[in-house]
Length: 83
Image (cartoon, rainbow, N blue to C red; front, side, top):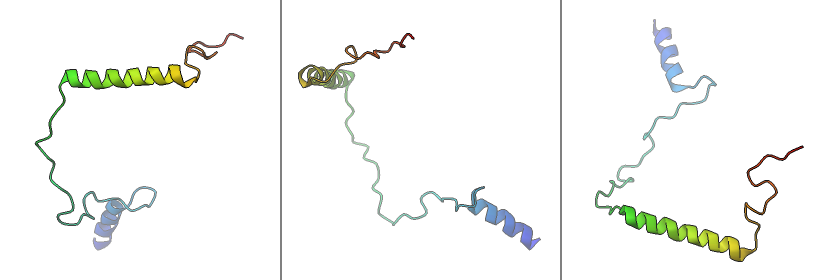
């Protein structure tokens, strides 16, 4: 009966491929992880919209000023080539 317990216990510590199974949070040093900051300010939808539109404008400006071909200039602009 002791062998049965060992084999079951050994299977829990190993994967099917024989690799050691990770135990989450087992290697942490006490005090090494800070508690999550609950005072984080969330952005309003208007702020997010402004950030994303500024990002989009920057990408568009880079495409036009950079001289790199855009997706519309590419021969493979989303359409399959006809044979």
